[in-house]
Length: 130
Image 1 (cartoon, rainbow, N blue to C red):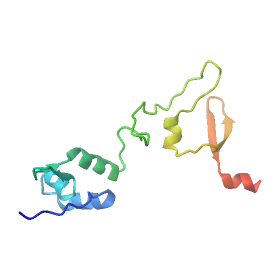
Image 2 (image 1 turned 60 degrees about the vertical axis):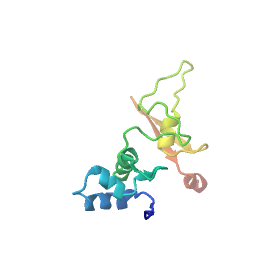
Image 3 (image 1 turned 90 degrees about the horizontal axis):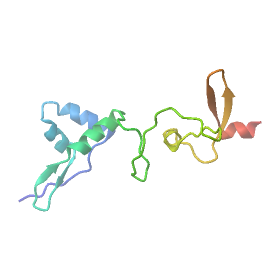
Image 4 (image 1 turned 90 degrees about the vertical axis):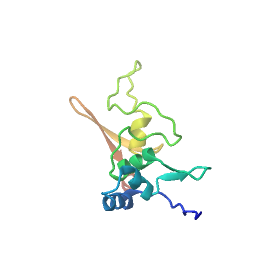
């Protein structure tokens, strides 16, 4: 019995190109051909359709549930609404700062409109130019 060498699953543009190339195959066979399968202890190939579908969604830059925290914990997704707290503060949650890839110490300029508050990120280069 010859042992088939398993390769890393395809991602991104390579995945999309391969799926297009295999358009006449079943979805299970496409997933398998793109590397989305495992071989069990008994030597049986098991196709991992969920990983395949998730890789396709990511390759097409489609997010169904927002970005999750890097520690793998779930949580609420960003609703793009906040409420003034009892102490008068507005709190912008971690879901928003993670989505914008903000780091502690990042600074913003606040401008108030009649019915809006605008935050403009201040580049660290601008601070040193003044």
